[in-house]
Length: 213
Length: 227
Image (cartoon, rainbow over all chains, first blue to last red; front, side, top):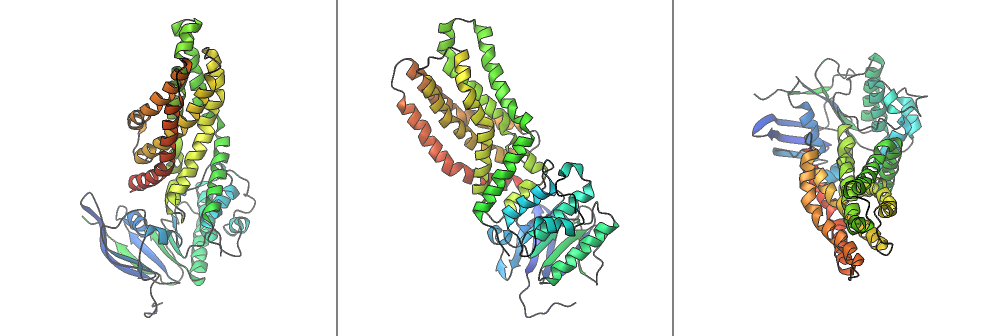
């Protein structure tokens, strides 16, 4: 599983820290993420997992250190073409149907070749729910719609914040299967987990975060 | 792989927000009812004399419509913030200012344009002279988008805070007072038989300036409030 050294990593962080109100949230942190890798970020509640993902996708500015994307410094403009974030808030509209939500995501972010919103819904196990308004779905089903969005948009780097929350056993296997496929197609993913459920295929690399006291 | 164009993104955003407004059309009617009620209450308070009402008509309608559109301003980014759509909007590969300009345009079309459409009815309620009505409509058509644009910057600044309604009103009110003075001033001048083009041209100039600057400022403000 060791990444090849001579290729530039998709994402490389060195001495990365983030401070809020003069209080260190995490870091300093060094890691790299290569194409085809799924890396787990582990830590207790409040250890800065969500903050780390927000820094990496550009929503928060890093306090010190450096993040390189394909070997070049990270800017929000360059980043957004390549990164898809799945946060605690799913970014879906409750009044719209599953299909309408996915069509909107495609309009905003573009679409991978060989997949349509209907196919994406089918591959997360929501066939037959195309015209259901989101507000009539369960929390786990909403999560599956958000996963379908990841399948559609052409982003190489997935940043998933607690992707296993709210999902049943089938859903957890689904996330693992999607991650495997994504890694095999030349993508990479960073996932946070507080440890209850985890990515199980192979032995993924882990980054441990500790709450800095 | 298709990366998606900015035009397609704006269209998708327009279509989504219009659908959402239609689904929540009860909320969209709220400012309309508010404006009608405010204007309808004035004759009860001041008496039904035509001269009195005609004298205050333009100013009353202007104030009622500005307050009514202020009422819905807080909702501009609220639901997007609560369900995480705003984060996705900021992370999208397209210029945030352009996407926000689309959102502001939809907000104006769905909440303020209906107010301008019923303005002739309100003018009849208060005996506004028919010759002044076109001036009132032009002044409203220039002043209300100005309010939406300036308001959007203030909403973007305060959207991260809870219970920001009060702060928003305090921020927006001083900024829209000039629009009110020039808009209602043009109507009053027309009613008195004086030249009224200068205040309308001033409003137009501010609108053009705001059209260019406000989306950029709103995008910058939104990035600050999200961090």
